[in-house]
Image 1 (cartoon, rainbow, N blue to C red):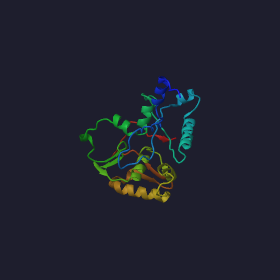
Image 2: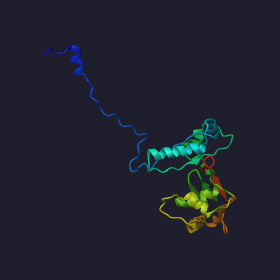
Image 3: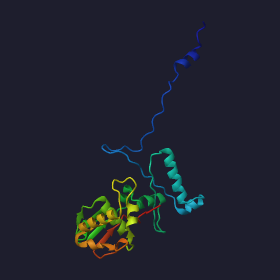
Image 4: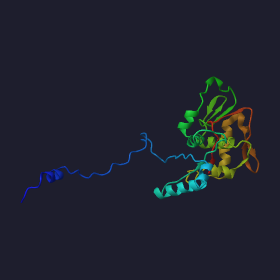
Length: 230
């Protein structure tokens, strides 16, 4: 048997073994003691740009929802549209992040607050920090109590019926199964914590509840309008 040529022998001896492709890197590590429950994808895309692309925001949202259902059949989606004044400048995605209360965007745009300027008395509804101050003391509201108060405050002057509160603040699968009585109970607890300022949450008999501007109440926003559901 004739020996193999030197070049052919070298080719055989230097062959690279096949290895598995590396796993995709994680975007960001999840801190110890927590687990990822989902993610937020901010899309900067206004109505004019959608029209120029031959579509509209509603079709884009539905397409993204369908894609999520195809990729992850067990996933749930929730979409909101970010509203901003007509003259608001900046990149669309930055406006969206701020309007939808992305923590990093809010922190970047939050002005410095001088503690000496805090009101000595009255009610402060701090939307940006999700807290209620009563005579400069923090009131221990539950999550749902603050959500109720915030929902009314952001719709100042409009009477909100119980059905709207239920559909907007409770989701399918919540531990609590809400009904109109549930809303009344939460409102009563909220008023008890407001003490002498309980009247800022008004009852409209036979309809629901409302918040009207009051001299003793100050609202602190995060610098952008509240988003409406899409």
